[in-house]
Length: 602
Image (cartoon, rainbow, N blue to C red):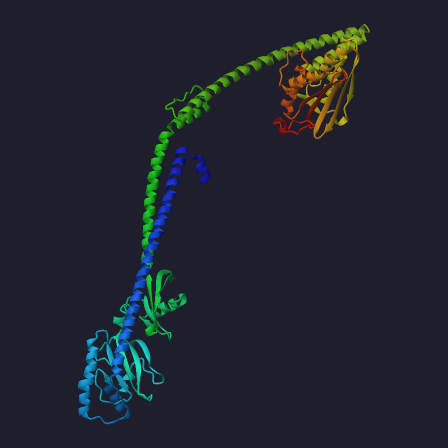
């Protein structure tokens, strides 16, 4: 359908489409490159931003871990605190005055350390004994420790713990905290207590606990996942695609539930966790799509305007051509007097002049054709008159023959019969070709009459196989060759002459040879004869040796094609042979008419 529409379209439309496409394709490439470059640059910026955020989280985590470790060491390096825990473990009675002094000097000092550091939420020391004189918010009994999420009586509680509730807080809604826990042992290894250094989760990982976000989580080495309610899904996706296993951030583009994300992770080695974040790229993709639609819309508008402008310009340029086409169409519909006006001197103007010249030539040819048809009609009328005259001649010859037979002049009667048959064969042209046997009969009559004219006798010898007797050849093609053999061969010797006509089938061709034993031709005469037959040299007179042969050559080639015709062979004093080459098939073929038949000249 598209190809038919294109074939029927005007040149102006085709040129407009072609030029528009030539402009459109580079623009498409340019726009695609700009769009992809913008998207790539934006994603690169997003990756850099994500990496910066990860390294900031890593740096904060390292600072927090170092702060907690230092704070813990301050507590552990206080001898009075360790001694007090030892006394509690051994169950010693501690005087009230000593307890008061310990609280005022040591516990108050430790409390000021916690209060002075805004990054610390609490530092708590837990005794191994349940019932002790607690000194809030620093020293607690063992039973307090049991209510915390990290407590496990069967294992060592050392390490970091995340996202657990502060059950010791006096507030109704205590914050979610994370803490570094370390057991306190004496030199001999006996457990004296446990120290907990805690920080707020929302201060350390502010984006982790947001209610409306499911794009951040912590994955601990023991498989625990910390974050909001949907953190487990994010952790599963992160573990599927892989997370960072070193200090370097891992950033990759993924799709989760059909939504594009930038999945980033980094290892927080000192805390034993991996921080994972997933930033949605949906807005970026939507922005890319909107920009693409905008660009395509702008490009379509430009293309439409460009097409309309180019089409108008090309139509103006081809207006002369369209007028020429309209003129030719009008001429084809019968307006033979049409003359196309020439409005310019460019190529189309020159084309229009040539079209006018062609129309003039066609008008001339039409006029000549009309004149020729009139001439043909007149010729047919004359031919009809000649046919009437021929019938008159046949009747007269028949009367002469009867008179000769009555007077017993049989030789004259036979000559009149031969002459009548000769005339009848020559005047009757129903076809261009005849059977070979018909042409042979015509030649026999001709030779019989020639023997009446000369004192010597021409003998005709026929050697034609039965399968070639119906081979078709152009009418009156053998007689001119035989006539040349008699007139230009036998008469020069002035003695009896033998003319042999033989035929054979060879390589798809029929070869008919007319051989005489006359005077023959020398080399120069034979060359002239061949050139006259081929048309390379004009015959000097109608009585020349080659005029009849050239006529036969032309009729054979007009009938069968350029591959066929005559060949002449002669030797002075030995006679002459003329070979006729025609296709073996009696019916004319397309190959013969186009001159593409079998080459018989071998």
